[in-house]
Length: 106
Image (cartoon, rainbow, N blue to C red):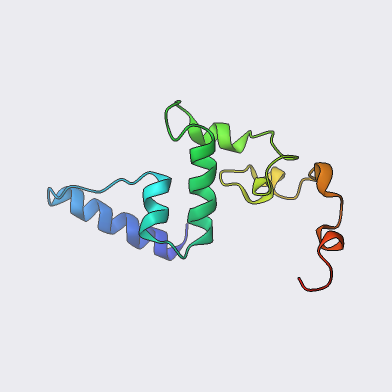
C-alpha cells in the first residue's frame, strides 16, 4: 500500500473517530471536483455509461465491459483485472493504426 493511501486512510479514520461526517462522492462528482484529472473523467464516463450506480455492482460491470470495438475509452477503463491491462483489443472499424486516417499532425 502506498504511503499517500495510508495517510489518507488514517485521516479518514480520525474524522470518523471525531464524529465528523465523511463525504463520499460518486465518480461524476469526483470528476467535477477535479476537472483536470483525466483518470477521474474516464472513470466518471464509464460509471455513467453503465447506469450511474443504478445497478448494484457498477465496478464489476465496468471491469467486465465488452464494448472494446465501440468505445475509445475501453483500454483505459477503470477497475480492470491486472491480466486484462495488456490484453489485445479489437479496434473494430478504426483499424490497427489510428494515425493513418489523420495524417502526421498528431
